Image (tube, rainbow, N blue to C red; front, side, top):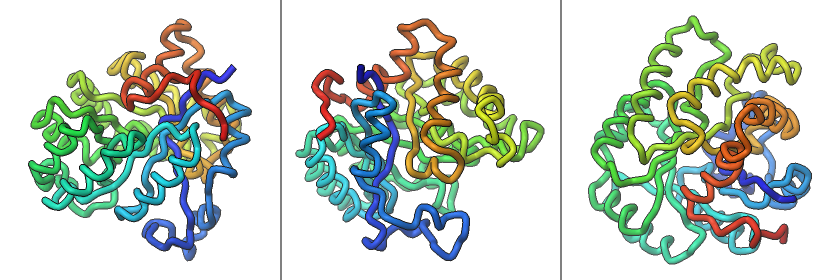
Length: 298
């Protein structure tokens, strides 16, 4: 039975050339420097009972969002697209209005982690661009790390009606250990953001934040992720967490099976109703996805 939504996955055609972060000269990124397209993911979705996905931008260009919307239009199981536009520019309004005519366009994600100014999100977005998000019933995916959480809180406070989801739990630096400088601010600022009811969080992208020994076995990976999971569950509750794979970036740390096993071990401790919320209900609600029963793997 198909029962899951992957709230965070990517596709790219490497030859398009606008993936600035995909640098083949860096050995660690070489496994990602090729095409990743729907045929590469379909069997994994079927194997793990995933009926729908949310396709998230990987390039800071509007052309890539157009490309992703084309893919979504050809595959029913791609339930929505989170794209990119420069929210600091007034002309973002026209772009957002155009995309909003496509029912699969669900929101935007500035690549905040790559910007030199950690305060960008608190200072730079154009008011009319934010209003266009609100007018279009769109959402905001926050690609951030610990240094961005305080500015993100300022942004959220300024725009309380805008639905926001924190990608990858703000990338806690698990490989550095919980005694490192990142840990206390991460715990504090995640808790502060969770005080805002429109803010949700994705259980995704965590294995790539661990050190290699922390993910050698399923048990080690579960132990590495569990403190993050427990803090997220305490702060957001099962009503505001959603699961995502972060495939194919996930491949840098582990395969799809390993991440599923980790999440099944953690989520599986919850009552069935709360498991359903995290595996699919919350993503469907946040991104306004059609019911899973309408999905098919075309």
